[in-house]
Length: 417
Figure 1 (cartoon, one colour):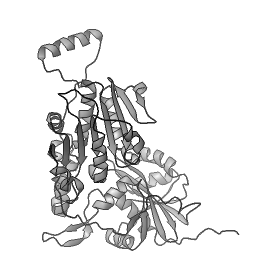
Figure 2 (cartoon, helix red, strand yellow):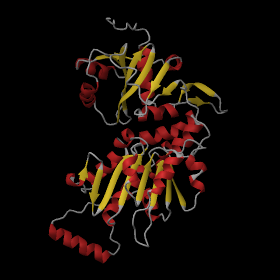
Figure 3 (cartoon, helix red, strand yellow):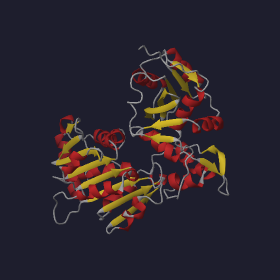
Figure 4 (tube, helix red, strand yellow):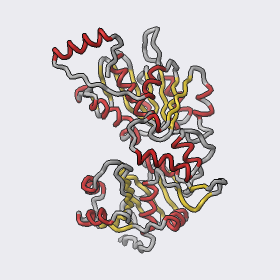
């Protein structure tokens, strides 16, 4: 991945490496990488649609800088630690391994620290402030930047004071899908001095398959708002969510202390799209959601192995996407109580809207889908009685579990006193 500008120097380097038996891996960088690499701004806003390669490109840039610079401090951050672990931090480690740059002895997994070429990388969230307060950084990457508050952003900028040479610059990179027109990024950060905006769409990502690109283009027929946000990477004033009855109470383990009245599961199958599994704890006719799984490229065998860990009591009801009866049967043969879900979308949504439902901060993908889940609109902007079919995997799993279970009588356990 290291770039050597001079052809003479490059050939000499290649000859020396061949003599030493070192294999050079040529890494193809994205156009978005190149635009970030050329940026001289202190604040670089990577604003784009779904799968536009913005996060991948900034991650590539950080790894490039690790190779080509020394004694620098890097920060990779998201709003919450749970979301960080399964997104930007995982991407960073995966790419290091893919580029043959990873050494486990340079990686402190407990504190999510990595050292390379005299550089220091920290991956942490703003809800763990102690590490942020003790280090000055040269480069900061805020992934899913609209999740942060303006105060978070200002706090992070104060840490952008790592030692550097006079001809170098410290930079903070923000990657995000623009959603809320009145977000702090759109209304405050863009008005600051020394800011560059790098816009991107799925067309900047050469690795996307046709099925996914078609799904993005088809949003034009379902929702102008969705098409603007996810396909074009543009702001809309208000997407208009379907469910306004979900309450985020941070954590609810204390509510379900001991045994809930009942526990059921919702499972939405996927492969190129994520497979989504949610646990629903029921107490006093209130529903408490826990996101268990949200992962692509899972075969049914992979899924069953994960379920053995995630669902210890195999007698619990699991309401599955009934469009895949063969997969349901295979899960049943593995010993799980897998049942076909009632897939009446309109009736299911109507029922779920009448329930008292609680989510929590750790449900990162569920909460994100919840915020974006909206009805289709006709050409005149009127709402239709049908949701947009995009990024709705956990929403479907929640509906399967709650709506399909409605006819099951819940009998609380006896309490002996």
